[in-house]
Every structure is written in structure tokens, then in C-alpha cells.
Image (cartoon, rainbow, N blue to C red; front, side, top):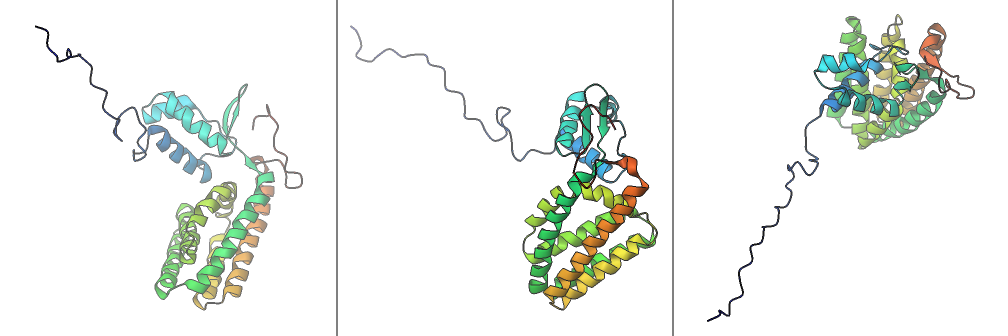
Length: 262
């Protein structure tokens, strides 16, 4: 006698939904990859001038140093090329990019506009503990200056300006400023070994802090403008002293054309 119950079908259970850690989905919380680490390290070496403008980038050597294939190295190199820090010439090789003079004026304007706003806000909003933190930044700068530590001074300088954007209530501005001024940073690293340069920067920073501490937004802004303008003057001197580190010029913004290796 036939049953009224329909026959049981053998169906394969549907695949489970992908979890955040499933290989089929990119985990936004993942740690840094080999390419991320190589990019970070190469970028720091280029900005600090440990890798000089025009110096060859040998992907095979980098891959061997990190114990990886050339794929993550290539990924990091392409990202740095997008940032203007590496130049790839198909017929000649891959090189640390020279500093493009044509990009410096725009970078300087972006930095000045954003930092003028943040220093004014900082002067209006700063608490006593925040001003104390700025004084601590100055003390750190004096220490590394006494040690002749240009790398340490650059880091202390960055911390000083980043702290002002935090005091202003717009820490995101610092991310934009860092992206805009990467070529300016390479120039700054050339200026730091100039005798007395670090002491001059500290004095300029002290004036900015005084304006913020006294809540004089106009004075803080004037001191910041003077500080940034003096940096441009120093960069001009270094450009003349080390012309092979630069490409193009400041008048028309032209750089080396395709196929013209450093």
C-alpha cells in the first residue's frame, strides 16, 4: 500500500555563510600583510633619505631580505609609485623618485591652509594639560637636538604638529597633511643636518606654543606662517646644494619625462 508521505529527497545542505574570518571574505580586521610591512619600511627609508633619490630599487634583494616572494615586494613598489616615491622605467629599472619641484608649491599651500586653521582652533580651545604636552614635545626636541639625532628630531617635530591638530579637535586633518607633504618631508630631512637648523625650528615652535598658551590665535597663526615660510627658504638652499636629488623646476612644474631615468 503506497504511503501518503512523499519520498525523502537526499539534498546536500547549503554551505554555511562565510564568517568574517572565512578565507572567502577579506577580513577588515586582519593584521598587516608582508606587502604592508615592506611598503611601510620602504616608505620610511625613502622619506628619511636612507634610500637616496635616484637610488635603484632591486626587488629581488628586498624579497630575499624579507624571506618572501617578489609578489608582495612588487605590490609595495607599485603602491609607492602611486605615491610618487618610486619611479618605474620599463627599459631602465626601478628607482627612488627624485623630489619633484613642481609638486612642492601645492603641497606647501595645502599644509599651510590646514595648519593655519588648526593652530587658531588650538589657541581657542587648548587646556592647560594640552599646553603642558606641547611643552613636553619641545623638551623632547631639545634632547634630540643635543644628541644630533636628525631622525629623532623629525619624529618629535611630527608629534608636535600632530598634537596641535588634536588640540584643535580635528585630528583627521593631520592625516591629510601627512599625505600632502610627503615630498616636503624629504626636503626637510635634507635641511636638518644644516648647522643650527634644529635650534631654529625649536625657537619657531616655542613662539607658536606661546601664542597657543596665551590664547592669542592671531599671534599663533603668525608664528606658524613664519615657521612654514622659513622652511621654504631652507628648502631652496638645499635644492641648490643637491640638485641631483630633485626633478623639474618650480616655474612650470615639469618633471623628467617618460623614459628619462634618474
